[in-house]
Length: 77
Image (cartoon, rainbow, N blue to C red; front, side, top):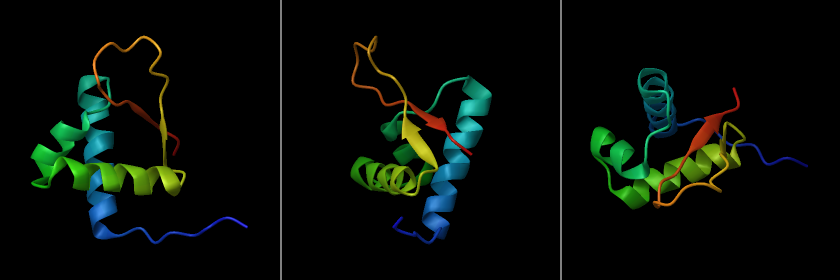
């Protein structure tokens, strides 16, 4: 059985930022960029990203060629 999650305003704001950032820049934002934009800590940004991943809205993109500690997510919606 799949666990259901409620979309909160915080998660909605995070998703909107990720979506708009990716449209403008052609690449997903790093957690620090999201934290700075939303006025939250980097760990809070990660919690929102993780929740969106748990909800099935985001998934981690392939990072095999990444040399820096950056995080890429692709939208599934």
